[in-house]
Structure formats: C-alpha cells, structure tokens
Amino acid sequence: LKMKKYLIIKNARQILTMRGFSDKPKIKKEMADLGIVENGVIICEDDKILAVGKNEILKKNRSRFAKVIDASNKVVMPGFVDCHTHLVFSGNRADEFSEKLKGTPYLEILAKGGGILSTVKKTREALNSNWKGLKGSCLKRLKMALSLGTTTMEIKSGYGLDLKSELAMLEMIKELQKSQLADLIPTLLGAHMIPPEIKRRADYVEQVFEMIGQARRKKLAEFCDVFCEDKAFTLEETREILEKAKKTGLKLKLHASQFNDLGAVELGVELGAISIDHLERISDSGIKLMAKTKTIGVLLPGCEFHLGTKNYAPSRKMIDEGVPIALATDFNPGSSPILSIPVILGLACRELKMTPEEAISAVTINAAHALCRGGEIGSLEPGKKADILILDIADYRELPYWFGMNPVSKVIKNGKVVI
Ligand SMILES: [Zn+2]
Image 1 (cartoon, protein in one colour):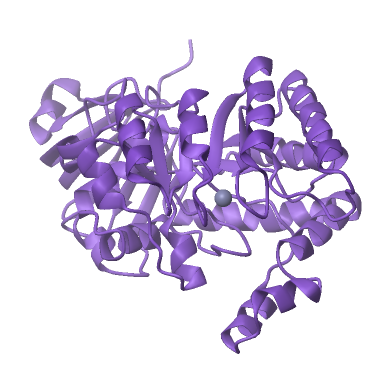
Image 2 (cartoon, rainbow, N blue to C red):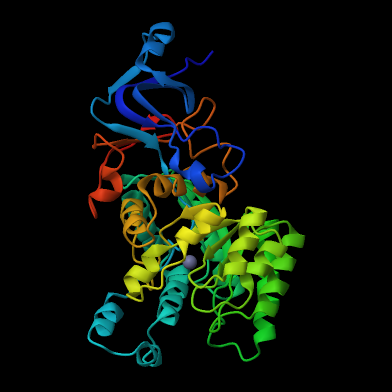
C-alpha cells in the first residue's frame, strides 16, 4: 500500500476559499464574496484538498508525516486560471512595438511584412525546422507564468494557418503538457486569420473543417475558437466553422466584438459557446442576452492597455446585468505581450473598474468555469485539486494594488511545492 502524502498550510492570515460555486460561475454580488477564512489551515492529501478551516481543525487531523508550511501574515488562494492565451509562437514583435511608438502606421508595418503574418511565418518555420527551440521558449514562458501563479492555462493554436502547421501547434501543446508546469487546455484556432497564400476564402474554410476533424480524432483539442472580425472571419464563415466543430464534438469559444460588433455574441449564445471573449464593443442587447443564458464573458484588458486604444469592455454594465465575467491575459506577441495575471488584476481594477473581489473571482472560479473545470479547480474546497498560491501580502486587496509586482511566494501544484 502506498503511503499517502500530507501537506499542511497553517496560520494563514486570510484563505480565499472561493467556495460554493463549483457547479456554476459567480454573477453580480456573488463575485464580491471570496469565502474568506481568517487564521486558517488547509490540509492536502496527495494531490487533493482534504480540509479547509480555522487553525483548530488541525487538532483532529494531526498527521506526523505531514510537511508543514507556516503562512503567518500571508494570503492563501487558489492557483490562477489563465483561460485565454496564445502561448505557442516563435519570435517576438518588439521591433514593431518600437516602430509604432515612433508613429509608423500599422498598415505600413503590415506592408513591410510585420504584424500577425510575421509571427505566422516565424512559427511555421520553427514548427518545421526548429521544434526544440520553439519548445524551449514555450517552456520558459510556462515557467514564468507558474512563478506568477498560473497553475492552469488554455492555449490556442492559430499561428500555423494550414492543416499541417495547426496540427503541429496542437501537438506542441500536448508535448508541453508533459512538463507538468501547468495544466494546459488546448484550443484549435485555425480560424484566426486567412493566410496570405489563400486565393479563395472558401478553400481555407474547407481546410479548417479538416483541422476540426483531425484535431478531434487525434484528441488534440478540447475547444474550437474563431476570430469573428472585419479583417478575419465573417459572421457566416464563423457560423459554418462553429457548427461543424459542435457537430464533431468540440466545445466552443469565440473572439467576438473586439473592434466591431458583427453579431458574433448572438451567434455564440445561439450555438451554446462556453465563453465569448474580448467584448470591447458588445451592445446592450448582447449584454442582456449573455446575462440571460449565463454565457461567460472573458475580458482581456491587456490588449486595450498594450494597444493604447482604451476602448475597454463595458465590464460594470456586464457584471451589474448578471453576465458571469472571467479575466485572462490573452498572452500573444502582437496585442498583449503580458503573461502576468497579477498585472491583469491591476488593470481590471484600474481600467475596467472592477473591485478587487470581482477581479479575483474572475481569475479563479469563473475562469475555471470558462474552461469547464469549475468542479476541479478555481476554489479551495475538499476534493478539489491542491493548486494553491501563498502570497507575500497580508490582505488580498494588495494583490491588484501593488501594480506590476509579483506577490507570489509559493506555488503548490497537485499538492507539491513547485515554486
Ligand atoms: Zn486572443
């Protein structure tokens, strides 16, 4: 018989349990309730949480073989869930960033071969001839994210833009998962852009259908996502792709209403998308519709911040109407080179006018629901995965307050201290 391993975190100044929402995301005032236990203790058994409560519960749960962590004067909370990233890509666009700051228009940058197509070119090359190098840089990013508290991450394909390269991107995510740095959830985003070599749009939509079929057969993707936008995919193309994905058995996500409101919110709700992401230009009727159906809205303030456009999503209106809100980094080399959930929390409070409590709910339990994992992660409750952060702050409100700092002092992943 294998001996069970116990880990005890005791004397925590505040434990943010986020309890009571494993079966549905938090909405409205529920987002303000962090289920705080003061002077608390968490007992983990192997990779699961066994008990959470006041320090006193230790008396009847004593184990001589436990590793003990003293969290005096510290905040303890669930690991961050980053439910929208584009972590796999080659190179970076720091040159373009600097050009833009000098005033070069984006169209000129695109004409010089910059923009998203430069990332596609570099990523295709790396997938073909520098797999190890690409894997190395992805692992480096995952380690950095883990040290910033991210224990679960969704990753999208979308820089391959042909059948072979898109599947290779998903294979890369599968290989990264083996590193066990974080739990990775793969999303097929073959419909990110129409690649430059394609002459007829319908030909590419056909290719995306093939990607969906193969990704599903090879179990390489859990979600299918489409970028529905003027320069990407039309509402009709988006419908065709998502309907095909749904029929094939993939769950749905959507990049919608970032720059233009094309009706993708209504489409996403109609098709039962798990989350609709971006939503900077969502209409009032779109908000009411999402609130009615409890579709999760994933807000990505890193984009507007980095692009400097300041057209933030109407987050207050969405929360007050009852849309369940999650937050994510949208980590990517073009519009959000931001890998830090603590920075996103800082932006959510300052720019989206969310309260610290709402923002913290949005990167834990609600983000878990945006990945259909509300029953396993996102809160500290018995039976859930022992993915736990110990923060070197005495009050959770310091988390969004100290902007740009990293308050994470320990990361516990699957019951083991990894940072
Ligand atoms: Zn994105």
